[in-house]
Length: 156
Picture 1 (tube, one colour):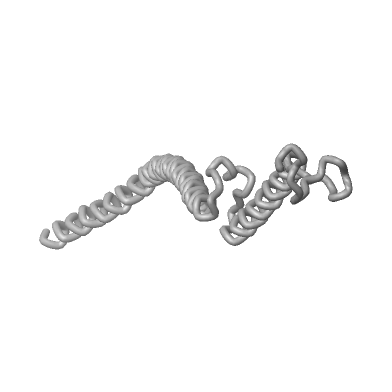
Picture 2 (cartoon, helix red, strand yellow):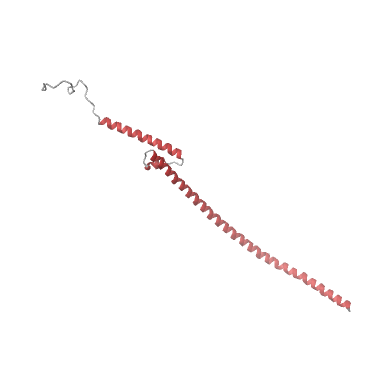
């Protein structure tokens, strides 16, 4: 009998091994479902991450563009201030800013000098013309209304 028990034990052991083999097979069947779910979750996470990254990039690019526009505006205001100072140094009104404004300060300086030269030349020309119109021209020496050093006859 002891042999029978051993055989029966072996059979039971064999059945347990078979059962153990069947259980992993069932687990393998369950894993494709888990993998499928994991794949779906992974794809959803990737899509979500991509959406967030795109939103972040868009917001970041908008902020960078806004910063660059603000920087350009600041540079423009700064340049206008410099040019106004140059105008005042050259005794010109700040209203000429729009005529002489340029992104390059050297070009603006040259425009200011040219404008100053044009204004100076025009003012000198107008002054000379006015002086010519209102100037007194004495008569020549041979005319009857000339001034002489002789005393008039009524003065003796």
